[in-house]
Length: 137
Image 1 (tube, rainbow, N blue to C red):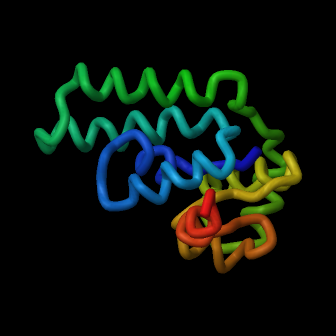
Image 2 (image 1 turned 45 degrees about the vertical axis):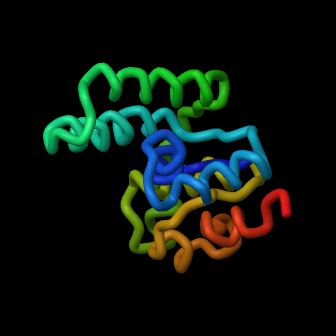
């Protein structure tokens, strides 16, 4: 099992230049987990696509439904103290620290493209590029 941040989910569910990497990461480890926060962040990304005219509302709902199905049973609520410990140890946002704290709590890694997280938490995070490059070769 790996923890993924919302960007990794977006890369998987919304076709783009990083989709292939996200697909390789899914092949390497199909058991993805995330804090419940991912839902609000994902909805916000989809809202941007709708507002720009890059996606219809019905396509956004289908995308969200797929992501929700994928993460069903693997969404977590974390104790605030765990999140705040990560905040205190870094310059990362509380949002980002939820993903990091979950990776630590599950004794796994966070797969992310966020450079700030990768710098602040090198033992709890791995870049999507590195993770996907070692996938299913």
